Image 1 (tube, rainbow, N blue to C red):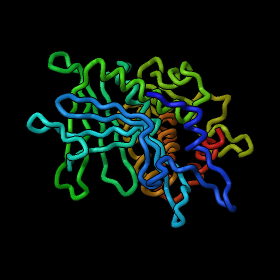
Image 2: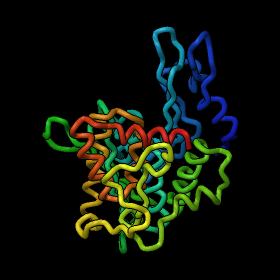
Image 3: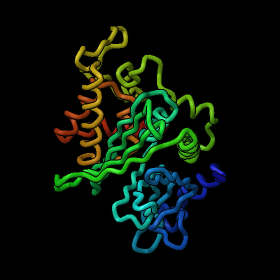
Length: 302
């Protein structure tokens, strides 16, 4: 992975003024709307998996790159009759993972959690699911599965790839590399700390710090608990199953109704306790996204 992360960040992720507009340097100069792999690693197993650090631009009618998107892209393709289909596979599945999903993947491949179970939902795209688990006995020590659900509810397409210990090491580097592209000035130690699972196992359920605290200019809302009083969420809100339902609902409401940044939505999923996510879901369903917007402002300023 020969990437100068600081240079790549400056070249592709920082906008510059141009005739009154903010534009980006296209990652793919010849085909600006197509995108570019800054680095890629191919796994050949029972099926194939390509992991890539990916940068893509939105292009306006004048051919200017007016937005940039990044992802750790995982592309699953099948093996048929001893031949890997790769790009010739009409049923290959590509999942673009943001930072929240990358952290979950990293925690699984480093053994911090026994299973990986992550829903990848994007606007104008069919829902996809990423699952990983370890095997006690078998040809591979671990399995990673991508599933795409049909919008017509006529079934789903799944591709499963067996991973060796060496494959897991390569994937760890790509998870860290993606984070380094976004935050090149952060040390590797700082990134590793952010990727670690908090002690106690249920990192989200243990969190007692609401997301939108960084707004000192805003008066406290009546429903907020004064700092002088100990706050304990209701018992049902501490249930991991309830937390997972809230995370999924946050993603659905955020992507379908709010239309804000995926990174902010994943930040809410990863940082907010279930009690607050439940409140945000209710507000969003009622058409009130003021709290969502405040969180986005705080996240962008940070």
